[in-house]
Length: 594
Image (cartoon, rainbow, N blue to C red; front, side, top):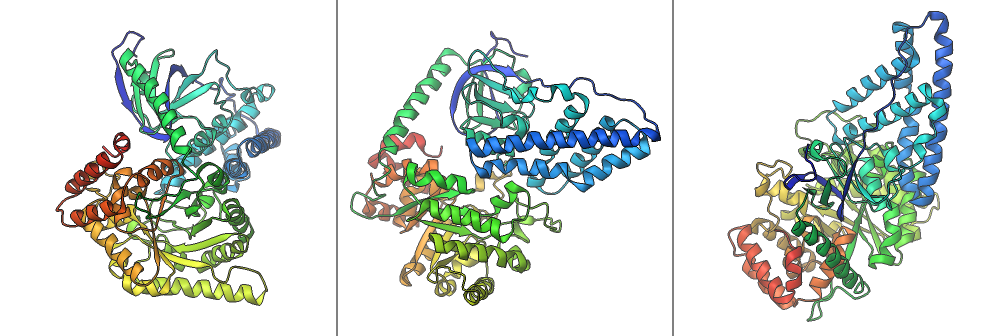
């Protein structure tokens, strides 16, 4: 381990909740006292079962209390995280396994629970499903709760009291289960670092909701001693251990600078995203939950350009029925009205799977049963979602779009389902917006090339640049060995985007763009110059993009595109972009992609 006099070291992990923090390390070494381990006689089985029932009831009450508190302090959607934990308490597989171990091994219920939880979590961990594997931690968390209530009933309330330290600190742990994250006090925990976890874990979601900077999947955290000073960046995942005075001063100075800069940007939120020579584009946000929509209009003065509906399912760990979806969509539409919201139909598959939906193992899931292909394969789920979206359109400005369209037939089949659902709603006299706009995402080269055949069937296109780049350049950006080939400003990508925009404009349709290109200031002049009508991005990216748009001329952006289309590489294009930004808005250069 390092001590306070050790040389500075830089560790790296995955940043999941943005923020710069300098603070002292507090280690979390939570461990449960030795659990009972003794054999039982057959005559004792019923008594052990009764102990389990009591512990399950106690655990259920604790989780329901936690759920109520999260709903009051954060949102109903974040409270839904505890729904998965409550479902586990009633999971027939888990309870059957515990009882089977009791009967066959004749051990006390604590040991039967330990063995059943371990088997359950191992089975989940081995699934070919990243989202499902992440829930193995939730299973162990629930198991630990049951065991505490079994073995130490008198101490069961101790966990609800947050650890009080004399000053805000950086919590370091192997992992932090959601039930502990839910109790974190941002006034005391300035940030946290874990060896496990991922961006989509329930703990990461809670960190972002609580506004606590966080880094997960960090390597080498065993060197972090209690009391050590760390300077961390929750956006980049960079951790400076025992930083020198210059590094600390730089972090603190950057924190102050960012606060001042952000304050100046937020002051412009009610200004239009309009270039110096009068070209106006629309900035909108990407969101995953209705709770995020509640602050959009007030804080950023924007609507929603991409609502990722699959996260409603992933975060609740169940297949939502029509009413549950309708309430979520209605709440969102009302929250941003009179601005619009685009609901994307399920983009399940690829790296996002629902454990309760049987999906076959695929060697290459990104090329397989995902997005619109999945919806057309499961019309029962697709139609329920379309009904909920259409019903919500009576309460706000709702648009619908279909993801990963690769053929004209796919688009036509999706529209046929939509029309049949509309006809059913009409027969039942259920109101919806008859003039609701429908679009499709352009995420694969075939769709970009066939835009002229698709355009007459939709009201708008939405270009998903992350998948478009991945499929066009045949590169998996999650592979570090070839990540350098993932190049959004590649001239081939620019030509595909330009074709889509040209076709849309010729037919009086509009084009939205989302993904890395929309949120990266370095590429803003490019997409603006190509005539993109709407840019959809993470809410925090909106203020700097708005500032940049208001600092440049459309004439210069169009000239940039003309030059870029004749370039032979992405590097050449980026040089041109930096040159324009340096001239128009030099303060933005430090915030562009390195």
